Length: 87
Image (cartoon, rainbow, N blue to C red; front, side):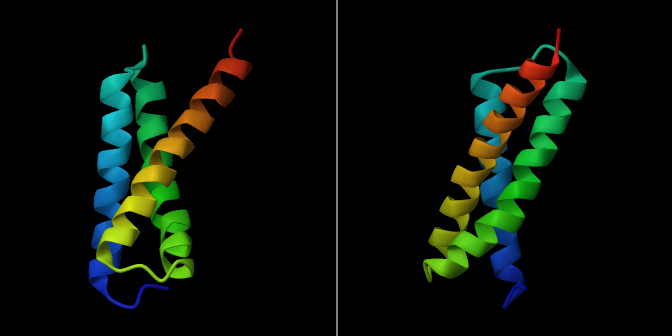
């Protein structure tokens, strides 16, 4: 899946900082909700960011930026889903 370990590191870093930025700008009430959004953001960044980075043929910065954007979008999607399910 990854041509070298630096791609994985870039995806993890992009996802981590994307998730962290979003959670610091808009903190959640409960720690479980915060943790679930953080994990989903990083996971989506690694898997989907890798595909997007590969499709656009980007170098290291492309992988990290794709992971950043996808990580923040995945967290927002999960937040909306969690709010819809909560009473």
